[in-house]
Amino acid sequence: MKLKEFAEHIGLSPTTVSRALSGYPEVSEATRKRVSEEAARLGYRPNVNAVRLATGRAGAIGVVMTKVGDYQFSEFMSGMAERLSGSDIDILLTPMAEHETTDELQIYRRLAQSRRVDAVVIHSPRPNDPRIALLHQLKLPFIVHGRSETDVPHAWLDIDNEGAIRRSTDHLLDLGHRRIVMINGREGLTFTLDRDRGYQTALAERGIAFDPGLVSHAEFTDEQGFRIARARLADHPRPTAFIAGSMMTALGIYRAARAMNLTVGKDVSVIAHDDVFPYLTADNMAPALSATRSSIRAAGHRIADLLLQMLEGREATEIAELWPVELILRESSRAAPRETSA
Image (cartoon, rainbow, N blue to C red; front, top):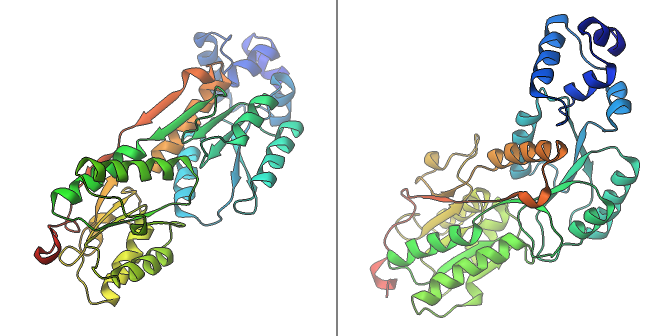
């Protein structure tokens, strides 16, 4: 059944039907509900190209992909897919070489000029992120997964990274730890700067001098966690605790401790971020891993929802969500060894 035939069958114009199925705000809720029910009853699905012509929309949300196989990215995309399922909105993934900001700007220009997407998602923002200024200039709707200090008005969703690391550090300090290593993400990103700030603030409030040698910045991988932890555990005096920026980093720390005949939860304590992954469960690690909890899948689901709201007319300046982070204590964080707790 073609659009014109379906519209005639239910007594509406083709334009009204197209706008109702595409979620346009000027179509009443009653009309949208009626059109959807009739479409389901008659088995009508709109032709994608016809909808694009009628609405001027591409029917897709763009995401630039820098890390193939990255578990956090996969979880985020799963959340987006769950929300967009059944909405006739596709996800357009565009690959690019890692850390090539200039190339990424060109990708956004191409997406805007080709009109292949209705909106895009920005990941891992910097305090003054050129992508935000560019997309604003191009008038391509977007939302930032994270935060940026740029003056350009924009929609964003972030978690309280500073508060998460501050709470983790406070907990370890309460347990008597003083030499606490933090393995953070790549330098220069807003979330890593926030986490650095949370760590340093917790130390300063206890009158403990900040030692930059105890903080490392790297990709969130098992190998990086292992390499950095092994090097720090060879120090004298040895650190008694680690804050890992991700679950994968924590796996590397566990592996380094075992390689040096140390027991996590006894000789060295560990707290990680990212507690919610279906295939990597903190409860099942040995010992069970203390971690801050924030579902990146839920973030992907919510960002897709907010983008749909923006496409229906919600102003980007109305969207600013900061999610709290919960600290879940398990067996990996215990009191510092007596001889090193002072």
